[in-house]
Each structure stands twice: as C-alpha cells, then as structure tokens.
Length: 315
Image 1 (tube, rainbow, N blue to C red):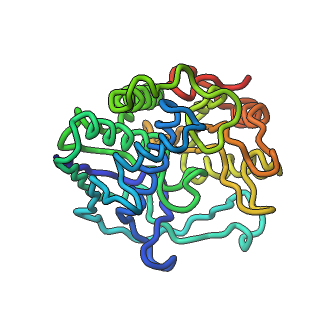
Image 2 (image 1 turned 135 degrees about the horizontal axis):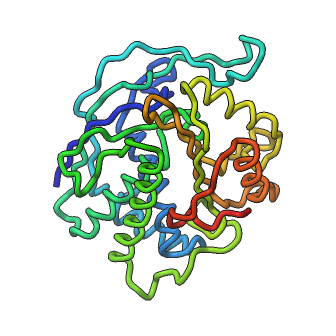
C-alpha cells in the first residue's frame, strides 16, 4: 500500500543532513518520531512496565536492528527554501546569548511517501498510519522539537481515510483532531495485541519512559500570539524562569523535557499547545504538579480532558 502526503513546516525547523552545517529534512527523522510515539501508544495498551511486549510489537510494526522494517518512508519532493536565522533563546538580553541559528523556515513544502509492505495485515497497516498521525499531531522533527521548533502540517493526502490532513480552521478543531488520532491509534493497536495482554487502565504514577499514563496532560493556551517569534519569546521567558529539573536539564547528564510544546498557525495567529508525559527523571526530579501549575498559571494554558491518554492531568 502506498500513501502520498504533502507536508508543510508549521514552525522553523532545525533538521540537518549529514552534518550540522546542512539543513535538510530526511526520512530518518520521520522514522525516529514514529518509533517514539508508537512506543508511547503501545505503553497505553500493554503497560509501561511490559518492556518485552512493547519491544515485540514495535519490531513487528516498524522493524528493528534485527528485523527489516515493513515500512518505507521516502521524500519524493523537497521545496526550495532560503534558510532563516532564528534565535533559539530570544528572551536573552544579550544578542550573543540568544543562540541564533539558520533554520528551514515555516511554510516550506515537501512531499513524503509511505510504502506499507504486503506482508502486513490491514490491521497492522492501520495501526502504523494511526501512530504516524499521532507523531505529527503531538511531536515534531529536528533540534528543539519539544520547544516549538520543527512542527509539521499534513496539507494533502492520497488516502485521507488512512492519514488525514491537519485541520486548522480553529484551535478547538485541532484539539479534537489530537483526541481523535490518539483514540484511534490505541483502538487499532488493541486489534493486533491479544486481549489477554491488554491493560485494564492507564499506568498510575511515573512511568520509566514517555508513554500514556494517568498523570499526563494536554493543554492549549487561551491567548494567541501574533507570530512564532513572539510566542517563543514568551515561552522561553517562562521556562527559563524555572530552574527546575522537572522541565528537563543539562546538568548531571542531559535529561529530555517531559513537555512537548507546539505552535500552530491558525487564522493568521499562533496557538500554543502542549502535551506532558509523567515520566520518571534522573535524581527523582519529576514533579508533574509543578509542571501543571506553570503551564496553567504562568503560561495561561487550559488542560483538556478529551484527549485519551492525556486526560488525567494533575491540578
């Protein structure tokens, strides 16, 4: 089965080719986020502690170092672009400290082809496509992908009943889209996992890796931004006011943030949304209550209980 997609960068993208001096969008970036978000979805079906089961079904759907992937992702067309210099830390007062870097600008168009091998059952093909939708709805590609960079939009699909275009008519349409794709991904994965392996309820407490759990949250900011730059300035101002390892840290070994922020271009404004993972961090630094308070009280974000797997936020 073959699905051709037209995509567009929603925000500046820090994706690179063979070296960091070459800006490029490449298939491995999509394979990487597909693996990440498929594991997150599988954890909600099999349980976060069932590492063997998650590994088994991830390999079955996406391949591994020991098994060839039954899915091929190809970049069939890349639109031309002129690199745009963007400050990664725009809240810094000193220009030198703002860490300006060239990026693939927002609005860059390209085409991607998903080739699903005939060895897959229809249910497995559905599950892969559903997880791919989740990866693009909640995730991003390239550096700084958890802080609003590298967001992608699906603008057209040759099989919209398998992978649907991104709805951007209004903010709540996008929230509903996220809820729909998360619900569908879990339901399709349940069709390929034997019922006796299904989890009765989402994991409680902090999980050993990013996955669905009872403390995850999905948020949308009430006020919109005039531009990506103004939104990033506000976001980084608030994030850097909290020198808390609960938001991720580079001290004592790099620790990825449990929060994925995305900026969405809707009605000529930018909407900020976020998905949180209640993941155990190094040195027992996890604190989802603090994360929830900062998002709601200082970034003016509202938590939504409609997204399956991200609907038991701490308040």
